[in-house]
Image (cartoon, rainbow, N blue to C red; front, top):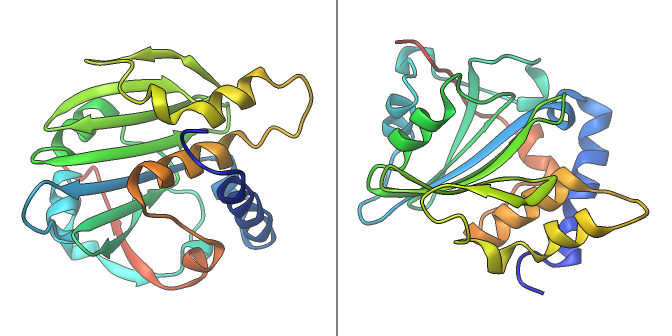
Length: 200
C-alpha cells in the first residue's frame, strides 16, 4: 500500500484519544503544515513573516492550554523544516500557501468542525494538487494526480461500508508519510513557539 501504514494511522487515533482528555478543540478543527525549503534552512521567523505574523507576539506555551483562536499558530523548527499547527486556516489559504512555498515545498492538511477540509501540496508558489480528504478522488490544481500513489489509505477509507472511519487521523498519517515528519500527543503538551498571524 502506498501512503501511510495502518500502524501510523493508529498512532494518530491514539494521539486524538489522548488529546481529547485535555482539549477537544484540535479534534474538531486543526491545520497542520510542514514547510521544507529546497536549499538553505528556513527559519521560524521567516515562516512567521510569510504568514503575516507579528514577531513581537512570539512567545511559548503549551498548545493544550490555548483555546480556539483563528489567528494563533504554534511553530517548531525541525532541522531545515518548519512545522505549523493551528486551529484554523488562513482566511486566504491559497495565497498563504503560495507565500509559504516560495523556494520551498509545503504539505498541509486541515479540517473544520463542519467537515470542510483539504490536503494541499504546494511547490514554488504553485498549488500542485488540492484534494478533499473525505473524497480523495476530488482533486484540483496544476497536477491533480501528483499525489495519487500516496492516497491508498484515504481511498480505502472512502470505500469502507462500515466504521471505524479515522478520517483526520488517516490524513495526518498521509502527510507524515509524504514528509517524514509527524506529531504526537506529547507535542501538544510541551511548550511550543506561539504567535499571532494575519496582522497585515
